Length: 434
Image 1 (cartoon, one colour):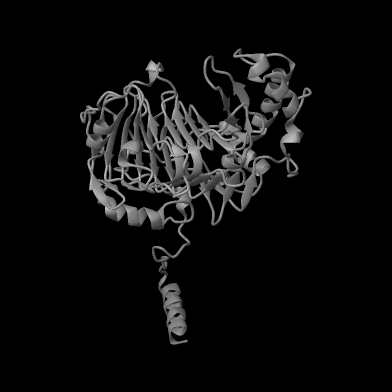
Image 2 (cartoon, rainbow, N blue to C red):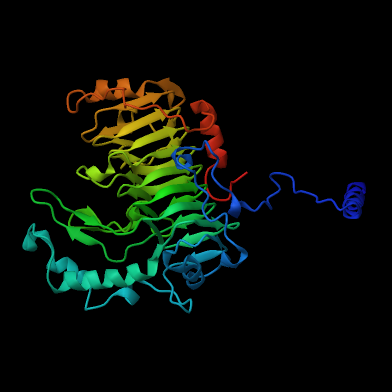
């Protein structure tokens, strides 16, 4: 009671003196929607930095609760400075009136999964690319879904989640945009109703899906911070098997491709997914040279099978990240993918794995030549990840050198892997901005 009376007295005094009382840091009422990236926080801080929609006027600050409201706020991907605050759960698979849509609602042209499987069974169809009525119907059905779930994000935009905000079933498309911030938001279940069968001559073939939760494509100056990305709602491990291959429904959680550049991904959580992050979209995409400069720091990768990240061409600073492979993750493949002309500079990352995953399994190379790594912690013990990788894989893959040709300069304090492991466990993901 005394404390309450004292607070009232201070408030009254402030009013009489014309003073403004500020909310203490961490009180949970700070408006993060006008935050900008710190001047030293990774690659997105280079060349003018990343400010998103922080300069938006009041007419371009929106709070949205439905897909329709979100689409109107995005304004077709316009470059007008804008701040979009997402409240509650926004489901991309809904009509303009808010009615829920499922896969049957998108199916058109006579598409039927059983008919599709019968038409393109490799035992009768062979290894040719699917064509004909069922494939045409699948393409038309997929286009109907894409029109709903692919949401264009333009330049000079900030998207933030309010407390507990979820964006479900959507694929945020940062295509050709510049100066974008996405923060404090859970993005889940970018579910593809119509995967395509891709035969492979002499091999098993595979199912190809369409949607990433966030696709940074030909974009620049992007800051993704305190987001949570997962397949929550429909896990691929629960899907059936067709033609001897898992019927995958999800693509990447976050892909950074097509000469995107100057991206920082921080304090985010990637969970329960196969292919998490792809940086660089092809071994022959020579336009990516000199681009794809990305910083990944203080992120948690939990029950991620592969691509955390897989890198082609880019200069990628990978520091203070936390990797957790659960005991029942028998499909785990690798964490850090070193591909064509990649230059990954890895510092003080922590890995926790069950006994069947060894340190040599953490790295995979496809035509890669170099990996710089220091300060790696593996199940609580310091290891030289590069030396272990080269020793265990020398018979099947060429050794990687430690010289990646660059040294990061744009970064904040780099903690020990042990400290980062604790801090990321507590602080990564949506709802945990301090």
